[in-house]
Image (cartoon, rainbow, N blue to C red; front, side):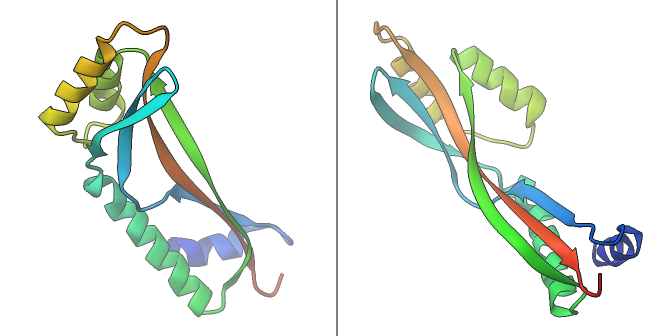
Length: 139
């Protein structure tokens, strides 16, 4: 990855920026909202997902330390994904995020809460996303 970042520096137009966008390396709880109440039901195991992002963070730290880029701006946002049913949640995780794991007890809690007779209920998780714009030194 470091070699790719070194190459990117040579390909950027004058005053160009490199923008790094990827999920934050953090625990990812999943919730069921029942009316106005939000109940945590477990954590999505995403360890395998973060291996490549940790490598990217190390590569960026390396080129910053080498003085090839400077950080122009950093920010982070929460990106939330919502589901109306347990089946939708299972399907999404199976198809879009096959490495994600959720304990069976979490699925049981989620299913029980979604069976409650209330006007509003939903399942969701929020993922922290970080954005970093890098300016090549010397441009």
